[in-house]
Amino acid sequence: FEPDPENFDVLKKNIELNKITNVTLVQKGVSNKNETMKLYKSHASGAHSLVRNAKWQKDTYTDIQTITLDDYFKGEKIDMIKIDTEGFELEVLNGASKTLINKKPKFIQIEFNWHQLFREQTIYKFSKILSNYEVFKILPFGNSLIKVDPKRPESNIFHLSNFVFIRKDISKNY
Image (cartoon, rainbow, N blue to C red; front, side, top):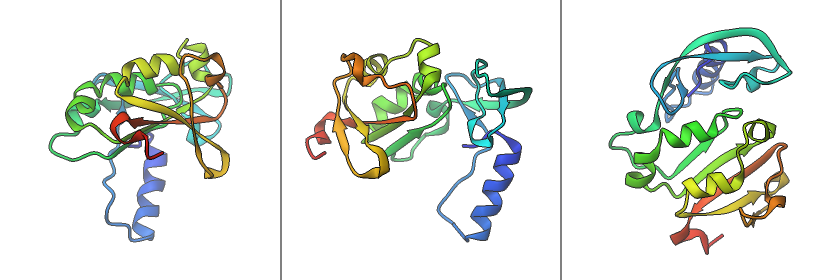
């Protein structure tokens, strides 16, 4: 999913250039509703957001269409969901409630940064939604995972953190 028209074109060209055939591109944002929303532009193309609160954002936006994961995924098996939406992760999960119950993805990865701080979102809040999952922090440089207790304050590092929620029935393997 890539809602920004410019980023979508770059992504499409890179996929074609590298002859990648196992990727489906969708030019939409992901949310808890199917609607038209404002995608606020940033100075860094990878940091555009549906959340309007960033000091680094430009005063421009693009109207985009959003879709829920519940409406997008029908018969497909899903092993992993990766959510990096610059502060809109909770809305994405709320729009995936049926997907989480019916598809039971093994892994759900979220980026966790200062957007969550300003929106009063915590790892604990995410863990309540993902109650059938254990929480692990992805350590820098991809070396390993460390299990975290979502109730502990130090689990909430609001800067460039990535967490993976691993389904409880397989989490002991990690």
